[in-house]
Length: 245
Ligand SMILES: Nc1ncnc2c1ncn2[C@@H]1O[C@H](COP(=O)(O)OP(=O)(O)OP(=O)(O)O)[C@@H](O)[C@H]1O
Ligand SMILES: [Mg+2]
Image 1 (cartoon, protein in one colour):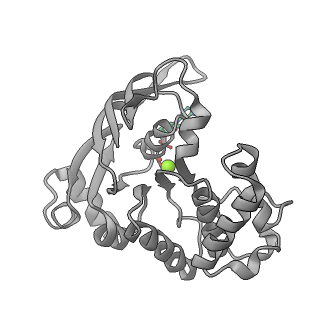
Image 2 (cartoon, rainbow, N blue to C red; image 1 turned 180 degrees about the vertical axis):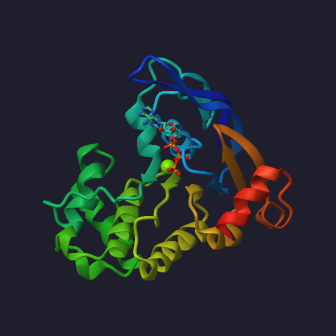
């Protein structure tokens, strides 16, 4: 579904120096896979996700999505983003809109569906995450876990072909982590292609088809969850796992 070829990302710093944040990433994600990415802070995990849906422009390299090079000049970035949902740590719901308005805003505005269709789809999705009773309230009255489930529903309402998650549970109180992971597991079971940056190693073990260890802008190790956690090959991954497990 996605092939990443020799992806590099550099940022120019204020003092004129350059940070080489992604340093030649090569990877292939097949339809239906659930890729979990772990790695130390600052290693480039978020930048990698943001390059996948072109929130960041890669400095060089290619991303082939469904046969199309989306890094080529002239590609409609908005169309690409419609096909790849993204969920962040901090929900980014609009506080002045109701839950229903938040969910149907993008699909209606971008003419992916009519308002009636969007409402129908939103209703189904809210039912699935047990939050239909919240359709007409404002985000401020929801818990963090509920807000994040709404953020996931909002992304799903666009009918994306794949979903990117950047530490979706990191900002939550511990007792709310489970309800969000449950929604993500359900999505995984439904066959969604997913790329997830997370510190939830239990989730990685249970759901991932592959786990990647990103360090200093490179994929240092890639394996099935069992091999990844039980037989880490590199010293760096062994050290990392000894700190987080
Ligand atoms: N817009 C930007 N401008 C300059 N530097 C940036 C920018 N975005 C990220 N960086 C730098 O790139 C590096 C990688 O950042 P990134 O956010 O991808 O790391 P991460 O692995 O997601 O870390 P964390 O686990 O803390 O979220 C960091 O050193 C960061 O400071
Ligand atoms: Mg990050």
